[in-house]
Image (cartoon, rainbow, N blue to C red; front, top):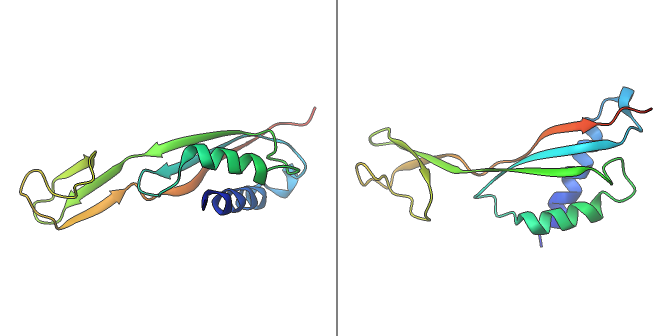
Length: 117
């Protein structure tokens, strides 16, 4: 289950990204962009995130996952499309010479920190 190492890295990266002026504030929401080709199972990632965030400022944070579709462009005819099936073939000219544009992402999109009262 590589989701555990991903969750640990996400938590560590998010903590490092919080400005020093907000140190000690609780994170309310963490938004991730995860591409469909990244081989990350969202359910497993959520479970691992809950474990990895224990005892940190992300412990009660809402984890929002944006699934990024796989898009491609044909190098032969420059047609672009969203790949819905595991067939990497240009539907217009039949070429297999394609470039994957999106779908491999795994990044923190935003971190929302709760203000101290």
